[in-house]
Image (tube, rainbow, N blue to C red):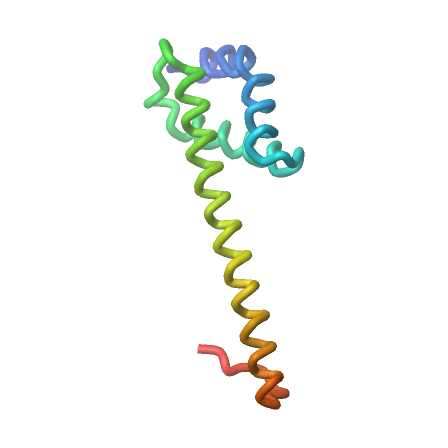
Length: 102
């Protein structure tokens, strides 16, 4: 697929992709970032783009990126909660300093 055809195809599905991103994240800033990343990945892998099922390919890229981002967000939240629990545990033990870093 050429870049010119890619841009034509993107114009056809742009609104649907943005709506899908908002539906996934329920946050307009995260949705916009997801849309932008989807376009970037699609351009990077342009030689793999199927002209016949272009919109399906774009939705798949977006879904996969969303899943990866969502998992990373959950992982960060869990780590933050764990760090907070550890700080509470240390304060109960009377620890006042910073933990040594590896």
